Structures are given as structure tokens and as C-alpha cells.
Image (cartoon, rainbow, N blue to C red):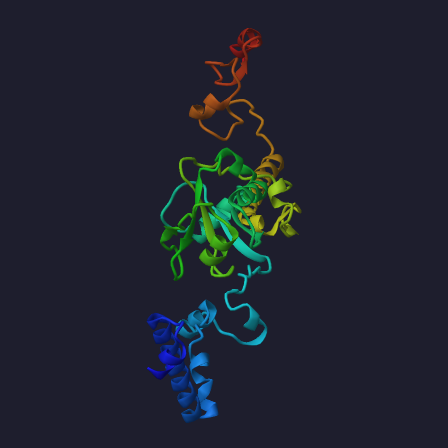
Length: 308
């Protein structure tokens, strides 16, 4: 009340505000003296809000590792690397028609002689279905008649004739990765099976384009040069042909060595009358002496035969 008396010009409201301010300042000064210096800056530091990056790193440490060169880029992921592999050789076998089993050994030789059978192609990682089809048509010219009506099959394990199962197609068809996976990295042969066609099995000549890359050999009997795979089938045929030609030559030799008998009169002939059917036509037998003469001379002989 003494301050209001000393300051008559101030109102009651101004006096209350001034008193509250002075009381607050006095309270803050007491707190400042009571709190140590190291704890005085604590509240200001703890009130800082964490960033989004730090919160994500704390919540998902496996995805947001802050180490090495990626420390300043916590959200950057490594780019996906497309792996490429060296070209690998895969064996293909073209069949003549649709079947459920692999061919026998004799059937394989027959198919190979017709320009079908086993071939090896180089497969790359970026191979497409159209490129594979083009390579197969180049390797097997008879596949042009199929017009892409074929599927790839693989055989089950074991020996001999085995069950064939179709290789599943992907959306892009038969690609390089599909061929590599189905062939086991080139270790298993793949069979090309026509779906609606039957290929011709007529044996091709030895100089056919299908045999251009095959090793050749010369037949010992006929001295003909042919692919080594075809020689196995040619041997049997060539042996039979040689045997038949030898038999024909022996028959001709015997016929030339044996002279034809000269048919003389009936009394001179060592065979009976029944064998006269083998004599030449036009000969007539004399009823008196039973000798044979040409038809033009029998009248002359008859005029002298009775006088004897």
C-alpha cells in the first residue's frame, strides 16, 4: 500500500501486473541458483525432435544401415545386377513324329540317315524363342515343313527307351534361361517332337547339306565316302549287295563253262524219246528209222529210207 501511495498516478491493474512480473523474476533467479550448470542445458537438448531418417534407421536397421559410403544416403538400395553366362552347347534330337518314348538305337541311326537325329547348338543367355526356332531350321532343313508346330521334351533318367515329358513354356517361349534350366546346364539332351506332322524318313545322299559338318569315312567294300554315322547302316546294305553280285557272277561263269549239247539223230542221242520235247521246233521224226530230220528234208529222206 505504501507503493500505491508513493505512486498515485498508477492504477490497481498496473500495480498487479508489475507485482506478478517481479515475483516471476525472483522465482527464476532462485531456480537458477539452485540448479547446477551441467543440468541447466539438459532440457533444451532433450526437447529436440528426431528426424525421419533416424527414426526409420532405428525402426528398420536391416534396411537402413548407416555405414560405409552409404552413410549419407540411407534410402539408396544397390542396383540389381543382371548376370550373364558363357554360351553353352546343348544337344537336340529331332524325331520324325509325335511319340511318348525316346527312340531305340536302331531308330536313332535311321533318323540320322534321314537328316534328323542328334545335333548340338550353342545357347546364349539372351537367346529368344524366334532365334532358337531359326537356328533349328538352319540345322534341320526338314523343320521348315513344321512351321513352328513343335515342342521340346526331355527324357527321364535311366537307359534304353525312356518316357518323354514336355518342357513347360514361359510367356516368352523357349528362351536361353529355359533351355539351360531344362537341360541341366547342357548335360541332358532335349527332344524336338512334331505336334501334327510326320517327317520323311527317306535316306539322304552322302553329300547332303545335313551331313556337311559330320566326320566322313570310306566304305571298305564300295569305296564310297559317307558320314561316319551313316556308315553303320550302309555296311549291312553294302554286304548284301556284294553277296548278290558275287552269286550272279558265279552263275554266269558256270553257264559259260558248260557247252550246250548238240542234238543229233534219235539213235545217237543218249536220252529217251520223251526228252525230244527239248529239241528245236520244226524237226520231224521218221517213222521207219525213228531218226529226226528238219521238216524241209523229211520228204527227201523218206524216198531213200525204204530202199535201205
